Image (cartoon, rainbow, N blue to C red; front, side, top):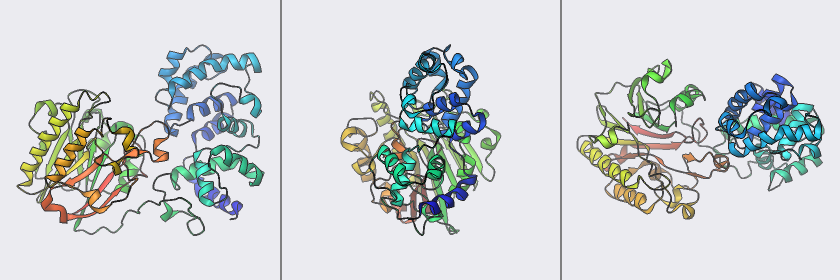
Length: 478
């Protein structure tokens, strides 16, 4: 491959992409201290989270002297929810003293010196050298490591091996640039999960080593088919700030069920209170900032049912049902049994009551139950089944109910159409789980047994971010 051609093509391709946050801070400030701090915060953390935490921190600790005045407990509160925030708070608390003692309160500009600072590894040191000082350095994160191997430019197993290999063969004029290009490209097109090979500017020549491209969304959907989308947004106000409206255009739902909205109608931006082009129906929990569901639909429903007739569950805003001419759409957020399984019995009671409610409706017309079921049914539905057998979401009791539910005729639409492993809809925010696709499939569209022939197609939109879940899709005949 001609690496220079690839990188020059990408230079033009990513010109309008969102740049990595450390690059942005470097451009805005040219301050080595702020670049260093932002880089420490950015490890295993999304750019938007890093940007917000950096902004909060720099208001109080934008210099070595100011940072020295902030204690660990306060730092934890300021930088939360960056990944490993407690460890990073400790690093930042000791950083001013180390800089003062060894470097006259200045950020050093050599790899060897930078590596003596708390919380600084080779990736961080290379970023600081490149972005703060303009010194040729190759910063290799997971995107650079992954994409260089996909292209076949290197054959390495770790980011450090990739750095050493690139030092030997990558032209030096690209050393500083390569991280910015590939991080932007890796976030926007060549994603770790569901890469957009269908629209990639390098598609014709890329070797695609180890790549499993995403399934392109069908265009020109028949008028006879409804697109039903479900998504646990883990805070509707939060996902709105992370590109929800752009994601909505790509999802193109006829009916959209969102769970865990964590808000009342009045707390939402105007655009979400009455989504343009849709009728909007909310069912929030009594408890503020907790649970809640909303359904947006292009077609006006004939009837709306809030709850399932049991105050234990209805007070938590978990089930919202819309009745259309020939089907019911049940948007449902199932309880989490919790880490200590203290809500396992509560969840089982909910499951039983929800099934009774749905079966009563199924006598009348077709029923679609969508939402976060908070359970991975089979071993194929999570990355590490053996380690999680007794954990919330994969306990024998929860899986047994799913067995009973499907045995009663309810159809898991995704598994009816797709038998492949590694198809997940939720990932922990820890340990780069989403990048590594260490996830669980806990979001479903289930239909009554008489309606299985109405299932046209299914999809999991793993490339859409904004939550720890991703949207799931059911194409369903009208």
